[in-house]
Image (cartoon, rainbow, N blue to C red; front, side, top):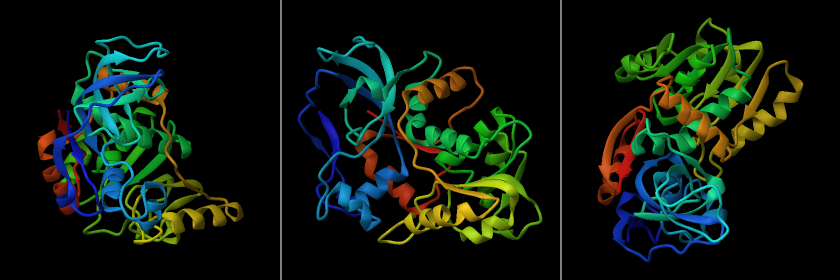
Length: 321
């Protein structure tokens, strides 16, 4: 089969579209013919081997897992001896532990959810990682009817889902983005939009019940100024230093929060087939719509990665195999 392989850390230049062995499946796994995969920040972090702390898990000098890709959608082509609940021909999607940028992937049944017929493969591939992170961040922020939510980084892959989900939960959403993305963020349901190139949201007079920080471009103390006295700040950003990444921000939030009326939280998004099924249902009924900026064939994955390395993404980038 064809796959996107890398043998060393670096920029998109290290990626190769080449032949590898089709994966064997375990007893509790299924073989999925990948129809679409989406690119996430974690894929770039794995490719770069940065922040350096990640290399403890990925491999100190070179990557242990040589195929990128976590979020996929496709068709079941084979079923393991003890795998239950899925059959050959079922359309599924889910989150892998890498290995998704390929024509086939072996996946535990527990990592997959059924794809509704109303949802395209490309749409389904955007939901693992990005949409689940958005949903879990809003839950951590106790988002609900009447709550005011600030989404910092509203035009990105996670942000576009966060804005839409906040609205479906009955909250009033304010999105922060650049000038070129103002209309996009309005179009997906933001009640208010702030252009960060013209206005520093942390110096505004507004107070928000929930701040979802997906950009990590302001100090924690700055966001506290626009957080309601009993509000919740949720950090879910990969931004940070070259060695520790966002870890210092997360530690600061955990250490400071017990002494404040405000709650400062860091999100470690978890894989959840139940969340995927819920999100797919929202897409199927038109309550949320994945924002897909561009679609590339698998063979042009390096070009897709270059786009994300040089520009702020508008929604998701999808690969088709």
